[in-house]
Length: 139
Image 1 (cartoon, one colour):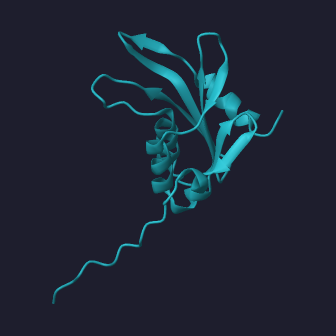
Image 2 (tube, one colour):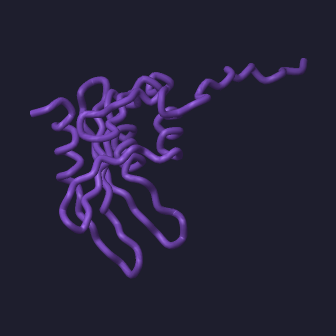
């Protein structure tokens, strides 16, 4: 098995599209591996009210619920009408979300396609933020 195919297979197994009207749930799935080698997965939810979320958010929520925060690798996948599996790069919102969960996640390996990866730091330009200063305390 090629490197990262294991994580792609986990995500692929979670694909379970369900249509409700013009909305599609579960057509994108994500899987991540934490720095402790735990695996978490989730699917997207597309809602008409704008309260939905990406598959990466669902996988990260599972990870945080389990008490972890540091992501070693992450992937999202989608299957087209012809059955072809595509690895999807995370959207900008997901890239920012991954970074905000834990400072070390700037080094997360993001799977971009079969055989192609990049660290999150390369996909999230201008990611460095100043450290907040302690609030001014009056005496």
